[in-house]
Length: 287
Image 1 (cartoon, rainbow, N blue to C red):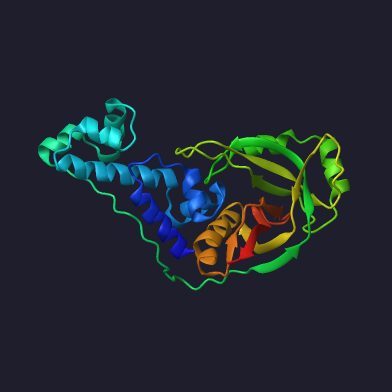
Image 2: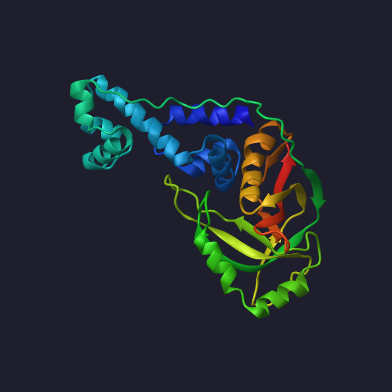
């Protein structure tokens, strides 16, 4: 995986002056847009588009120091106007492009290189599960793509579930895990900004594909799942587990994530405040 990521970084370097789209980059990496952006964010702490913007402006700064015209540089790195480039450059560097050129001021942002760094000694429990075809049945909504914090649109979705919908979910639920799950899929692609939506579904797993019109059904093909149990303060433990999957487990495992809806569930402890047991189910295949 690290080798693949470094190849992607080189690809970005070779195309900094092109119209780079997240879809094209993800295809080059051999992953879905959503999973690749998630991997990148958890490994680097920044979004993919933020990295590309920083690299473009860093190279633009070098061009300014070489004496190239500001207008030429703006269009070279994909800005539609001089004003747009000037605003972006000042927000990034703290000074105007003209000042960089006249006063020889520079700010740099070097390209990334991924390496394995072993820290700490915390174990991470994982079990591999083979699962036949099933359906996700539940209530879904297009929500803003968000990698950190509480997604208010998902909270609103959960609150909108009716008693009738909950009853039908309970009736349909017939395979493990016997919990209400949160699943995400169908992320928007083809744009450079970290914007757009994905579909979030709150529902259950079932082999029964005949849910009523009250619920949406999503067919999930037979595949392998890496399951990560976690227990502790909520939501920190669940979020930390997800981050560790991408930063610790995937880089050194024999598996890669595939473009199938991943899901998770959380079961709150009735006797401990803000404490929960949860599982993250990641669809994978052998490399």
